[in-house]
Length: 183
Image 1: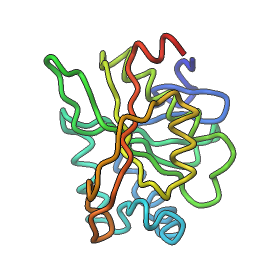
Image 2 (image 1 turned 90 degrees about the vertical axis):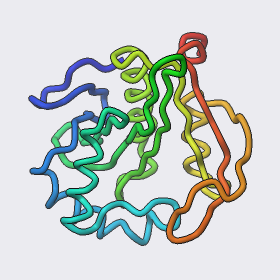
Image 3 (image 1 turned 60 degrees about the vertical axis):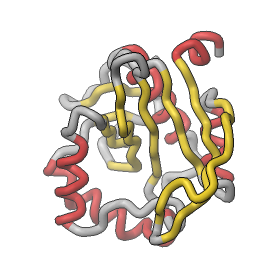
């Protein structure tokens, strides 16, 4: 498990990535990479591509029911995003996870390490019990990622999320703190 990284605002780090919190000063780099990645990320995800959309995203990251992480190279370059959303406490202690890498960074193990770091952070530092990932059936890379990270398939939800203007089917995958301990 990664510890604190060398960056002053890093949360966790591994050999390939450093996790940081999104900041207003990240806007220019984020928007440049999101625009350059739009054709690669669609139809799976549509990140903010304007200053107004980034500002709205940044506001959401500061809510109690969300925890967001920027995935960076050890040299500090922004390579992707992992978001925990709909964080519920009480008897549930659960969240949903969403993630993406910008174009040119896929296929090198970065997101596998980043998602693993976020899952451990969520269980250890945030005290969550369960994390659910919802993946469109055609997104083979994302399905392989959740399998590698120890998530188990729980079901199928037709027309589950509205993405890119249409209601998309999703497979439901989840991991609990017990799954992580056993794996």
